[in-house]
Length: 435
Image (cartoon, rainbow, N blue to C red; front, side, top):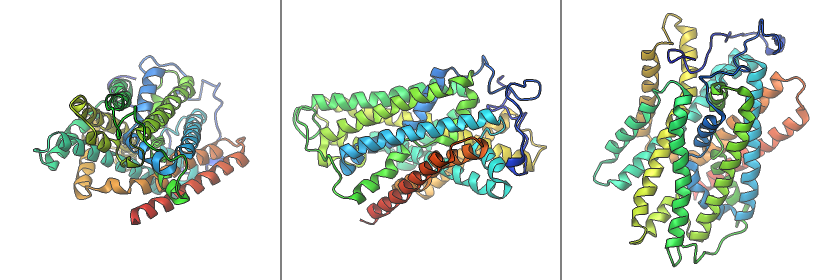
């Protein structure tokens, strides 16, 4: 892969409108006729560590700050059990995406999976469904950066803060190769880990409750009601969302055989971080834990820990900015495929097209954020209603369609479990919104 080539190589992608059952797979061992990009080592690709940086940064987004609140509402014991179970299910469905691409090299995006597996009639709907999820996630990231900048510099108007957030975020989308973006993702990864360290430091530096690990608060081991637990399901799911980016991460690997190792490391690390971060926050603030842990931290800073406010705020700014480009990649790729099919004369491989398209999409995100400045208030509903489908159900359906030897009974049981999570989580989110 050279600098002039697109991030994902689509030379061998041929869109078939026929029933997928009629597609004959070429043996992966027959290198004379089958594409070999997915099985061949590529020196220009990402190493497993670089891909892990991208994956962890993708998962460890803005949702982590709500997890202590979720543990307080949902109860520590069921929350820990559920978050571990959800982490395992998310890792498993992510691995199914890699298996689908390994079987059929042309399934290199969610939109392509929808087209080849479920037909042209539903492809547009499926593509819009996944793009909407990523689009809303980009909006939430911009809003978080804007709000935090305004917290640091209250004299700057929210609109100017939003424009600054837009400028910083859109510039990273111009990076063409995920192997380069992985080093920027490392900043987001270190920032997320630093947020946990800062939380512990503030807890040890504060001698009296609330906000102290030396004087821990009363904690709820169990939820007060089922609706309380259902309410936090959607927030937990958002902590493991982003599966539509995994085709890009898989294809960016120099050695595709390392994909499962990347997932094992990334999901193990992020699940452990979620549990430790959440338990620490609940022990510090107990029933006074607010929906955003940063709100609690700022309320308990003293002369010894005042500088932490600035540190935490900049950490919160860095993480969404570095994540914005990862969320942009599959959206831009799907739009590029659409343009190629409708306007083949446009040179979609040019640098000017690459930058212009991502700038245009980012500008649409900016406009939507200005129109709906409090859109993040419904992200709990999105977590249950949308993220469950995109991260858990859709990969399973794709794998069952591609692999005729898949154990359909087990996978259908998993789908039923995921649907119940989506239904109950959406009910809890709506119930909370009405209170």
